[in-house]
Amino acid sequence: MSEVILISITGKDRKGLNERFTNILAQHSVNILDIGQSVIHEHISLGILAEIPNSKDFSSIFKDMLFEGHNMGLKVDIESISPDAYEKWVHAQGKERRIITLLGRTLSAQQISAVSSVIAENQLNIDGITRLTGRISLKTPQKNPRACVQMAVSGNPVNILDMRKRFMEISQETGIDISFHVDNIYRKNRKLVVFDMDSTLIQAEVIVELAKLAGVGEQVDHITESAMRGEIDFKESFRQRVALLKGIPEEQLQGLPKKLPLTDGADLVAKTLKGLGYKLGILSGGFSFVGEYLKDQLGFDYVYANELDIKDGVVTGEVVGEIVDGEKKAQLLRHLAQKEKISLEQTIAVGDGANDLPMIGIAGLGVAFNAKPIVRQEASNAISSVGLDGLLYLLGIHDREITEDVI
Picture 1 (cartoon, helix red, strand yellow):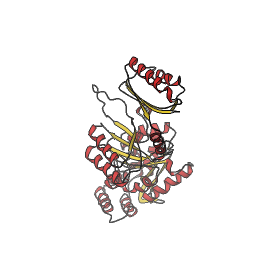
Picture 2: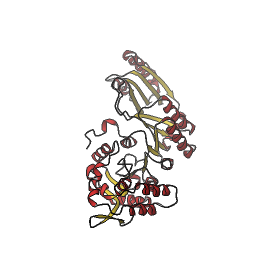
Picture 3: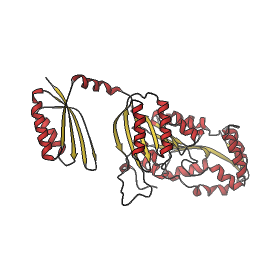
Picture 4: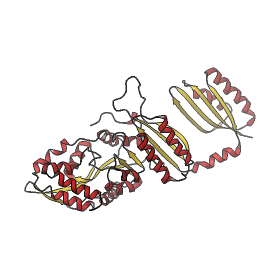
């Protein structure tokens, strides 16, 4: 009769450790049912769940494993697992899984404890924790430190809306970003990433910069505030603001894109994702002459934005074609997914404003970046504590896999 045992090996890591212990099991034709290992600061934790075909071999295996552990200075624990306990474990594998990402300049025990409490309250189990950022030197601190860990959890949350609310509260109180999304086949099979432009890819609002050129900054600000209060919709407010830009000479537009500062991490994100084969797009309520410049500079594949109407070398105060608002961004995302022959689940959308919510909502992974409160409340994934390169960690990319030679 067979027997199931759980072997736990802990202590200082060394070469050949796995070979020596699995060789003992091999001598008794043991079947490996599960195996897992982690190493932190040269100390290993190795777990092996095994089936011994002949239970009479248990005592021999037990003795040999303990003896090998003693020789290597390791602690070895061996526990017999009952058939019922094993079958319960097997049938639990169909549980829903999620990835919870903690991202900040540093991570403290308080922050991890607070997140772990919410996970426990929702009766979820933490199956694994992975550090995605590199090792941190205490002698020579980084200029812009980043710390990120991902937790793989399983189970069905008691109240997912409350869970999201609690994570947002912890984020605001402790200064870290907490994102969570379902772990499915699409998580590692994303193909297309679209970004808002103003205040996402660049640290500016282009219409504000144009208003300064036209000397109508206060009027544009007044219309913007009215739109934010809900007194007029985006399209109407956009038309009113663009009308105030009438008369700007076209040559003044040409030098503007070069003066607009990129968001921290934007070039790194573009370089890394392009290197991994992603398609990149800009879906913006801003203006195409800036979008086209960024497309060329960052190596993007698509850009959709509003085109200023220009006649006789002067801005007319109107736009050419349909205004790109929130609903249009969602339509464009669907269009690009169809063009690339992928599902929406394989897309990622990143933005900061309310007009980004429609595309964030339908994307497989929607991310609020340095977003307004209303956007953060709606999005399950947010980045505020670090630059745009924080997106790479949400995708599960480790520091060592991130392209260093940025554009």
